[in-house]
Amino acid sequence: MAVSHPKYPIVLSIAAALVTLAMKTTAYLLTDSVSLLSDAAESLVNLLAAVFALFCMWFASRPADVSHTYGHEKIEYFSSGLEGMLILGAAAGIAWLAVLRLMEPRPLEDLELGTLIALGASLINLAVGITLLRVGKKTQSIVMEADGKHLLTDVWTSAGVLCGLGLVWITGIYKLDPIIALLVAANICWTAIDLIWRSFNGLMDHALPAEEQATLRAAITATLEPGTTFHALRTRQAGAHRFADFHLLVPGRLSVQRAHDLSEKIEHAVQAALPAIEVTVHIEPIEEPAAWKDSDLLPIEEAQKKH
Image 1: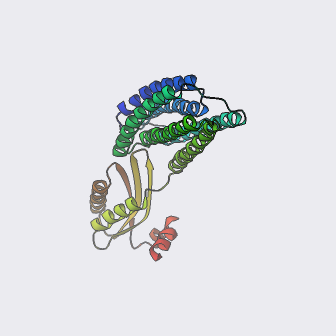
Image 2 (image 1 turned 90 degrees about the vertical axis):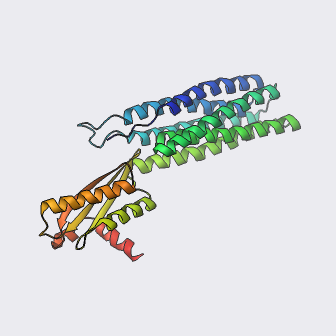
Image 3 (image 1 turned 60 degrees about the vertical axis):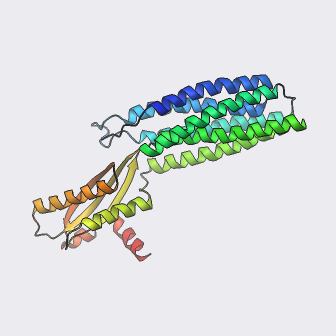
């Protein structure tokens, strides 16, 4: 079942991106500061990313169908990766402009008004970024978390730009402006790499975090009946939806109904410990030698037990 996330934070992000893009562009036109231009370029990326994020959230909320039996939530990881690529592109453009301006410095104008406008835009991004991050963590939406982190990174880079422009205004050293822009580009690159890495992990069916796996194993172990055990536990996550499957080994004389009841009991225990998880249990006779050799995960699990 697809997990539905509230859409208002992303709509708010789109509105904020439009407003801050206009404000930062105005600040750049007033001052001719390449560092403020870099700030405006990031707001353009914010806008593109937020629009795509809204589409991804709509698509991810669609129920499973014949072609996508596990649902559509993995598109959230694609969104995160695309946002990372957009940020990298913005960083490259900023760095190029900064190098050109470093070779030919220009005097800046109306710094007081330009920095005030940029400060107002940063405060808007701060408020929206905190909202996105809070709702994203609560609903486990990688799209909202990625957008929130991007906006908060924008706030920090904007703060650095404003401090740097203050130094330019005090010292009159105009080369500081492109140097600040290069630092902004480096910071943006770091954020992009983090987003792309998270996207890669999600698309490659990365296992759940170690602490969640430990919670899952503890829930299964606590529910097992005497003479039963489990192995070959696999986990993955798509958006806010978790998946787990494992082999439940029971005595061969156990009836199908009894084995089914035990697996249902374990599933309920796991879902109580980790909400929004879908569990698949494969039942096998514990006396059958082949049941202990039927998964490539078994050597990995044995190695983990020794450490």
